[in-house]
Length: 199
Ligand SMILES: [Zn+2]
Ligand SMILES: [Zn+2]
Image 1: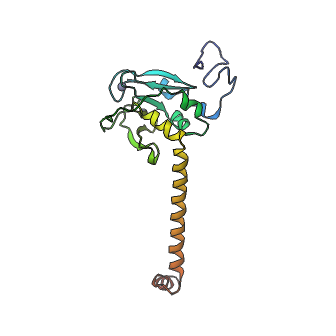
Image 2: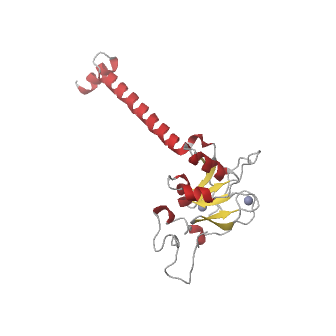
């Protein structure tokens, strides 16, 4: 486990460790300096209401609920989870299976600002819906992080990206066909266009 912070040593700080003296890899920069250090009015678990505690994971710090197994991750950590070079971070999360009965669907409050979070798909076919506060991070119910990690490790994110790119290409090709049909002088649309543009 990396030291998270050492106030007595000025050369030590977030992202600085024995393995990485004096510097920090790009995505680690924001992971161990979560804004909740400065916010945190309640730190209550959005799911069960117990107290959340800081849990170091690799070079990040997350808010963990020991009672229900849910976790609140700063946005930088959520992004790092999906990155190709985030393997070490993904491996560092404790494996927690999803319960047979999924948690009741309801809107949860951000543990930091207590605003209602948005529910979104982590990535289309991952079947993991996370709760997002645009300012602070995302809430994962017990097992959801493990679900996301399995999905990413099995190349799901890459496949989702490829599918999205393919959909965009198809959409572009369709638009092009429609446009060229509209420009075709034999079509009614083009007659209409001539009337509009060449009076
Ligand atoms: Zn909880
Ligand atoms: Zn918030």
